[in-house]
Length: 211
Image 1 (tube, rainbow, N blue to C red):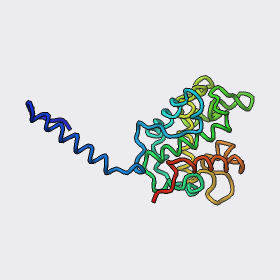
Image 2 (image 1 turned 180 degrees about the horizontal axis):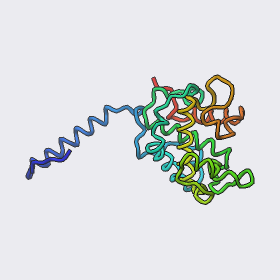
Image 3 (image 1 turned 90 degrees about the vertical axis):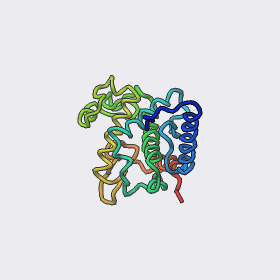
Image 4 (image 1 turned 90 degrees about the horizontal axis):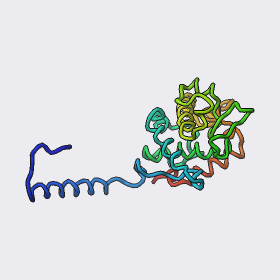
């Protein structure tokens, strides 16, 4: 909030000092578990690779933008992947979804943004077909665009947000057939790969059970 009254000399300095103290006290009242902080990059599965900070930042940005509904959902099977999610703050929830995509990308493309699978039908980090990108109105809709890591992940967030909201599930809602993210990403249909992905996300601080 801007000050409309012009203060001079020590009065102005005193006002700024008081404001700084108030902000410090307010920050102290927020528990670390409540939010991760918008400027903090949480751990991702691809962190050992150079230059992947941009992928993380872009995924989180998508989760604040067109994918904002995703961290507001509480899928039926969330406890399998993130035990602390139900009581987590919004930044921790965003971190989980970004982390989940980073773990899936290991199996989809081995984190190769220019990977092409299925004879060139599936493209990039999350192996998205141009037709799928077009159907979900992604910004990147052709092979060249989907080979940009950030754009591919942004598209993946859009797809995941739609499918998870549709099914109220990441993989299964207890009925027959694959639901949520498993509709589009085959690694989530493999019991072995799914278990490994879930073990990794559960081990992250943003998925720790909150007291």
